[in-house]
Image 1 (spheres, helix red, strand yellow):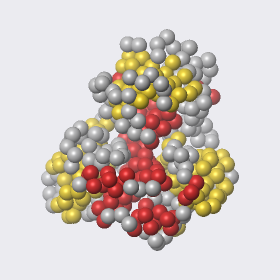
Image 2: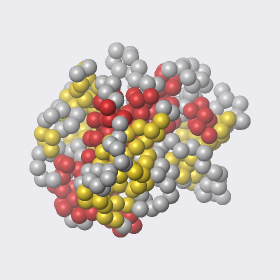
Image 3: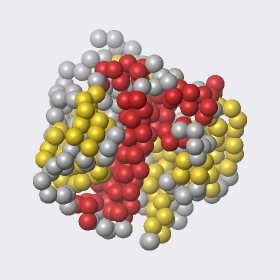
Length: 393
């Protein structure tokens, strides 16, 4: 075992949500060790391909141990890249854990360990609105920015509107400094959907189709924000060179983000009609399945069904040309680890080769990969928000 840490620092400088997201971005496998003078035992979290699978603090283990660590405001962390032999006991996705932990902190359900209140720690106020109301949304952060793709910069002051829901445009920005809020308008007022930080993108794959895309949400600056305008023409050329299967996968990702956001809005509005699935559906991929099958829909519908403490929860409907199943290079918090796929009676699919998609993904530029990762992270985070709204936690 190599005892040299590949990533280390202080919790007072980088918060645990940011540490989790950094390890997720790099698909890291290894052991995260956290020590604090205010805690009698160190905390250890085991990661596999960027997701936590187990943890210990003294006699506490699993998900309870991970939740407890989010209450540590002072301490040191070290990550050791190594093979993990401990068994998986945590099945929640990384983004779901971050969401739940921040909400539990906000509700006083996690003990705060440190010299002062966690309120002064980085990221602790990620879910607070300007009026101080709760509703913890983690700051989603992306990988390091490749400035080769940034052709100019735009500045926005606190409260400045960057994108308006229902507007049109092909611009894609990457956040260089600061944070933005993503919101949707509902009959009950403005609903917070996500908070994006440095390295995240504003704009999706629809912007690469050489036509103005409809903006599906409003994006507003939180404090002063510096954005980089990404060279969409270069990304469009890369998109054009992709196989038809990979293009379907990317557009399907965009559709999933739109669909799960719509579902979260419905739940925010307390509309539960979509909790009812059509009759005669049958499972085609069961939650927790280890099968490595990947499909594209040619006819009919498929339904992504998650699971919460209150039971099964329909998340969204997939339609013609949507892709579902095993993806070897990313985790969006859906099938097969965290959701099932149910088929309509008339569903017809074609099989795709996940290995071919993985090879094509590996050939993408770093910026294009980061854009894929950004959409996946937002799908995972918004799924966690929808589950939270449905269970009423």
